[in-house]
Amino acid sequence: GPLGSPEFPGEFYIPPEPSNDAIEIFSSGIASGIHFSKYNNIPVKVTGSDVPQPIQHFTSADLRDIIIDNVNKSGYKIPTPIQKCSIPVISSGRDLMACAQTGSGKTAAFLLPILSKLLEDPHELELGRPQVVIVSPTRELAIQIFNEARKFAFESYLKIGIVYGGTSFRHQNECITRGCHVVIATPGRLLDFVDRTFITFEDTRFVVLDEADRMLDMGFSEDMRRIMTHVTMRPEHQTLMFSATFPEEIQRMAGEFLKNYVFVAIGIVGGACSDVKQTIYEVNKYAKRSKLIEILSEQADGTIVFVETKRGADFLASFLSEKEFPTTSIHGDRLQSQREQALRDFKNGSMKVLIATSVASRGLDIKNIKHVINYDMPSKIDDYVHRIGRTGRVGNNGRATSFFDPEKDRAIAADLVKILEGSGQTVPDFLRTC
Ligand code: AMP
Image (cartoon, rainbow, N blue to C red; front, side, top):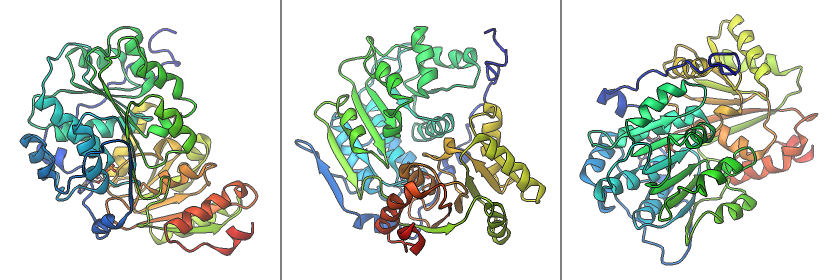
């Protein structure tokens, strides 16, 4: 279709320029909380041949000074367990499959050693030939990783780029053709660039799959296969996969793309973060709205409410706005500009409540999320784990409340009981008997 037609609603959207202000760049992260030191008690499982020893301090990780400076400016004092294990593995040139609970620092676990390696062993930068390709399942998560990469690369010469759908192709192309060491991308838009030969992988030294199980799941697996096995892909690249959940059948498929890799699991793969206090209410579909109002009337600030459908999200957002709760929404039918605006409004507190579909379930690291509400239960338990993991990050307390409709949600009950038990929560009787 022609550019600008309704089929390409985002064709002209040019995202705002990212900030260059150091204070803004370094204030994006969440400060670690009172449970941070308990991370040390989580059991660690590592397999693979000749696994490099974990590091205990950022300064013993052979990271470049400029990277250490940026770690300090970010307020990180001690590496999290996934960082302790992954940084030496990546620095030593190995492939990696890494699993660790939500909010435990996976992004820095791959960014720090990669950026440090680029500085330590520089290769000449060619236009359209990224040296690092990081893929993410959602546009907003790509933006977040982009900002993290800019933060850890601050005051270095490394160039960080981003390509994602729903935005002006021409604008992103101009950014990419300026040359980028690191490209963060959503798979569809990345392949658009690859198919038009604006991006090739001859110089690619690292391929990172964030939310790897999602990237290899139906919907993305064909795109990912095309990227990872692309004819231009530099044979000597390292492949790194990270997630909080990793079903075994997907781990097997992931293994096909990894060579002599190290496997690291911090805690139970697919387990929920135990710093989130989880409450499950038995609520049928007619009672959900009044239950939600009751909860929000006590405390609405920083609440993300997950619903099943895009229509449901719109409906609930207008309903809450009428009830005088400043509410916005994010889902796949909104324009990209609206999606980004919604997140900005929620982050800066001008909107107290964010209604979301599962597009916002993974990876997003937002300071003021105090409470996650599952207005509709997800159909898969891993999705539940990711959703409630929007809170209780880096050792902070979090709170999640879920509406369990026995008519509809019976199929997830047994898995939910396991997750509650595994994260030290009380299991309500109705869940065991339903
Ligand atoms: P992530 O799981 O990568 O989304 O990180 C979750 C949050 O933890 C982010 O806000 C990071 O800025 C923060 N973080 C990551 N690593 C550390 C660390 N070693 N010390 C303190 N905070 C950290």
